Length: 180
Image (cartoon, rainbow, N blue to C red):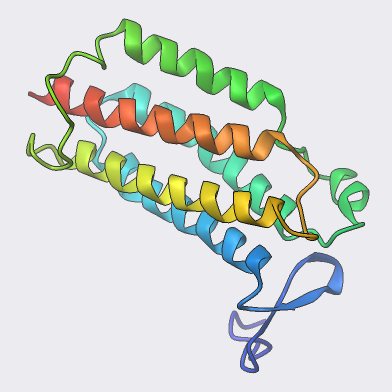
């Protein structure tokens, strides 16, 4: 089987369970934004100076795959998806809250003035900032989707992305601090 199915040549794309949407649909934009976030985490994971950074990304990246699955589930098919795949739950938000607290306690907030991405000359910090803005874009796309008739029923998704963007900002400062 080839990765090139040609099914998208007409401007439509497949979701789960045989459902198709135009590639311009807000749900497809939200799905693509989370995919972009996950891709942006790859260079950070490779460049990270701290093992804890690599560990947290190894934990969170599969959650983003499940989040994409939730986004790719057509309305009314959520129970069918949930039969085999975990929903992004409040426990994931709690995990990020705890991680943020550890970073703050470890000195990630020790900086002066505004953070200027790349100014410290630490590639992993710059990658964390790039991933942060990708996360905020995904958050905005899903927030827009939530305002439509095509809303995602899981309220934890927006909470998770909001918290993850905060965590990525702290992670950038942490990577810069420990690499200085």
